[in-house]
Length: 247
Image 1 (cartoon, rainbow, N blue to C red):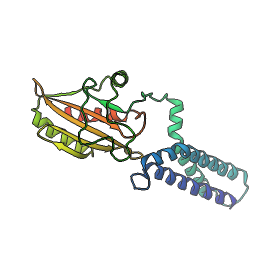
Image 2: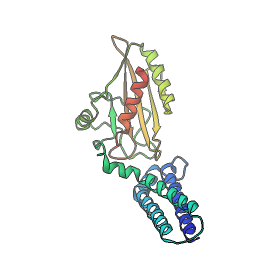
Image 3: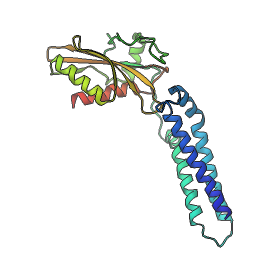
Image 4: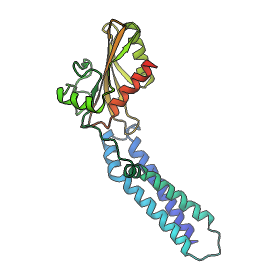
């Protein structure tokens, strides 16, 4: 009986911890708080919750082996095992980082396919909601860090006409769930905002299409609203867009 009580407590705590971790990650998407609030809370408490769950699950399992009783133990053991699995799952990102060295990204948050003449934002400004970062490009120092870390980020060269390329770029942006905030078909450019799946951080994007001898050239720039670094998110977004455009 005592084992079942301890295992039940361990399972309940594990479920509450998983829900709490989920709320910290997706709370901004639910309108509960700003992205940075959930991010900071997760950084502070996620692993702590995982440790608590694992500790309780292990205590439950050990106590079950020590208690002598004629009553069935399978149900209590199952609850303890489930709690342990949930705790380990919560700690899995940290455990992965101990086994596999994490990728180190430079402390930059402004990525573009054209570091010599980055596309400029016209509609979006530094006063955009929640923005701590400027939309003014950082210059040669930022460009050098990007070229070293993400040498594969390059302009998209297409055989499509500039008008057709613009329409395709706009279609892909919608497919990627970007929020188009301004589009100018006459000048072949548009601006958009994308949200990260975790924590709901906002990044702003400008896409510019120009004519070339072979057809058209598409340049992108993606900038995080907050944070010194972006953990490679903006580069991955541009790379995904490029793959979709050329596939």
